[in-house]
Length: 136
Length: 213
Ligand code: FES
Ligand SMILES: [Zn+2]
Figure (cartoon, rainbow over the protein chains, first blue to last red):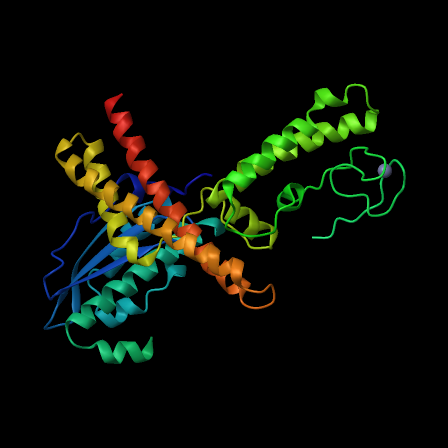
């Protein structure tokens, strides 16, 4: 299957690969896996506690090109957004941006799940767990 | 499993499964592995007994014994011999056996390449991938870590196998209409998990040996 130019670009030049300090209270970590293919994705955000703005985001994905591109794009989208804005990110935005074919939609879902998991980890660490647990 | 049928040769009803009890002609082989061996559909199987049956049936069904018999019987003996070999290969192995029972009962078991990620394993799978990455980049420092992970995965496999054995017995002792399905469901997810971990071990082995090559 042919990857779109945007996927290839992210795949060949992934943005924000790496990791942040998991123990840092400002950092939220999301680790998710795709049951269909066994791919795993780790995505981390670093939030400025004063502003609630995501100042940094990193990822490391072991998986297909679309999963790598989706998580790479996700980290770009996250930076500069508030945590609540970040929660609103939908996998369909990733699908559109990368022109993912239907068989690769689950790869973008994985990225959305990773964002949600990272945010919920951040909130848990910072004592806003109860509120998210109810809305989830 | 109902395999009462009329003998193709003499027409007698209730001819018996392998050879007709009246005219002794070889019957069309029953494709179901358990029925073929005349064994009850249990997940625990006495493999010594299975082996005995396999040897005696191989002798009875050997195509050489049918060279002077009718064309129909020659064909049946070929078919039967091939079912016999398949059935033996599957039933003597607990994992293949369980997969067979599940499949015949209509459960979907994943393809070879489908790998369900057990959520509690995510962390380790991620670590494993990291270590394999480093190994590919030539860092032998991760070798002890990989060995350790491999050992842990093998332990998990052993634990799953032990748990499966218990589940087999639970399955076998339950009545057909009372809770077998529930145990089969458990067995299915144990098999998926097992396959996933097995793949991880294979992956480690593959990368270690390609590094030595
Ligand atoms: S194929 Fe698994 S995440 Fe893309
Ligand atoms: Zn007969």
